[in-house]
Image (cartoon, rainbow, N blue to C red):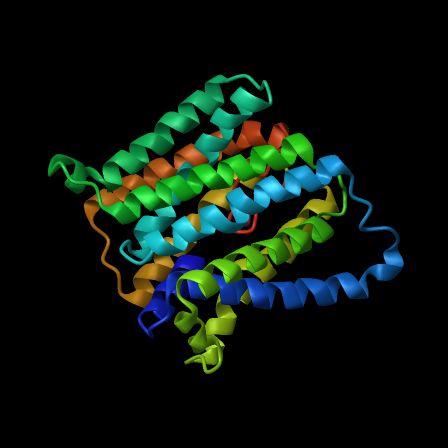
Length: 294
């Protein structure tokens, strides 16, 4: 839902960095209320220096740089294209897991990676054949790289088990950094926050694109019955549903290139998510705030 609702809000005059900053503010309020309600569950803030190091680095990669690349690129890329382009995230997670976590390429990760790369080549083929590559597409791929780095850095450094606390700290730091950057570079753009147009559409973005998926996803993990193949299938189907909603709600047209790319994308995600889930790495949830392991 994130690219669909964002594109709709862009048409009403929202600027990408300001929109992301506003989403962070709403997310902080909701997660903060959730943490206050959970105080009686015991210690949730006993982070070590290693945890803080991981949180600071992932704040920069997955809380600031990656999302700003994504929201900026979305300005010139359709919602359906962005869903396909960001499907490279699991491929980059595998690559960085091999480099930084000493994991090994398997037949599944190689085949899944090839399928995902082919899906990107297919969706961009008209531009590739014309020897041009839209800037928005490049920004989307770079945002996936930042999201993958966030996943691996969290896996490597953060050992604190209360993930809700980690996300709240990271989101708060991200809001501070993005807000400070906006104040220094374009303070006039923040005026839209005082009188936002279509407040219900705006609130739907953080709720449907960030907060609700967060609680549903980690709620499912707490049940302890999520299988590797199930995780891959659900991740792939989520993107297919997103493309269908982009077509129906935004009126975006699908070409034969889109259809072929979606087939390759679904196959690649299903195949590559199986080893990633067995490695206990979660590559495809909340990349804008920072994906987490189980």
